[in-house]
Image (cartoon, rainbow, N blue to C red):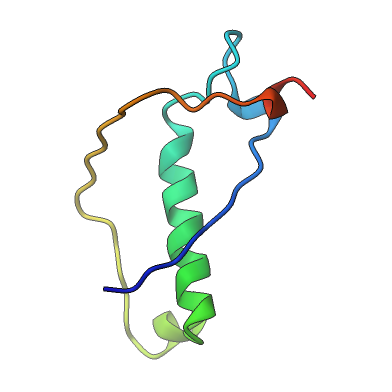
Length: 75
């Protein structure tokens, strides 16, 4: 198993009026993390696709244990 840590600074526009990250943004965060993990392995996504390797997401299921909240939404 490959371990990769992806850090994302939550932007104001990603939060709802209660200061919580809107659930649909998690999909974008996961895709950004996947792209960065591949890049760290020396496998830029663009090069993989150019060589004929494609990795579409065909199924996705998320379980939210608690909301992502941050003061970054308001600063």
